[in-house]
Image (cartoon, rainbow over all chains, first blue to last red):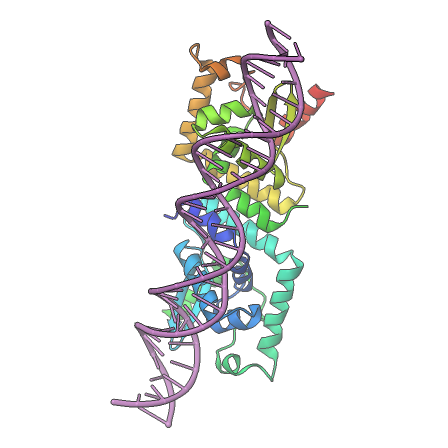
Length: 142
Length: 142
DNA sequence: TCCTTATATTCGCATAAACGAATATGTTTT
DNA sequence: AAAACATATTCGTTTATGCGAATATAAGGA
């Protein structure tokens, strides 16, 4: 189980919160983070490692792509705070802009090379709860 | 209004969380922090300044003493997270030990000099909600 | 097998956070 | 007014965090 220190430190960084905001409702592969957030790939990977270590996200590989998604923390307090944090993020202008950019990129016919090749998330489908999302994904992956 | 960054950074420090845990249910003056947590006075003051800046606590002066207490953040998301955090703290062994030490010091006839002179909190009275506490205090201070 | 693509990690550096020691400020007491 | 007391701030140093550039790993395709 992850320490409170690790948990809060993970949330105390803007880039990490921007990443969490993008996978609020669905998993994404790494290239979308670099493209939408406009930050270098090593930086994104480092922050993802941080979030993995804090057990806030998990990754699965599919061919060349790594998909990241949020996981419900084991600790109930942490889970509660994470939910509240995601709601807070969803309420913020900057975060909404990131999300809009993601949707734009997904539907753009002139997407950048890397994105054009990457499997696109079904971003338009409105998410249910995080738990439902993950159960659904688990079933799919069986 | 305080930024999300400032808010999370404030919570991402162990000493600050230990301080918040001690004033979970009542205000305290600074010397109790240094005594219970066993950390130097400048360090305590610096962390209190941090919490003040993040608008998580407020201070009032009474003579030589400065009393600190938790305030409900204006932002509802922040308020929610702060509450959850305090509950989380209350569930932790280390934090409970701090709290026990506080109670012990308050009731000890052989308290350290500084503590012996300081006005003691009514620690034994079980707190109601934070809001009720603060309203009560405000009324008292009129 | 070699080359390309997607992602992760390492390295050296820059910036920020936390610290103890010393000092300053504000208040009461003598 | 001076001394004592409680708390806050400043200063110089240490430590942790974040960063870009370069490099490593891992998978797929030629």
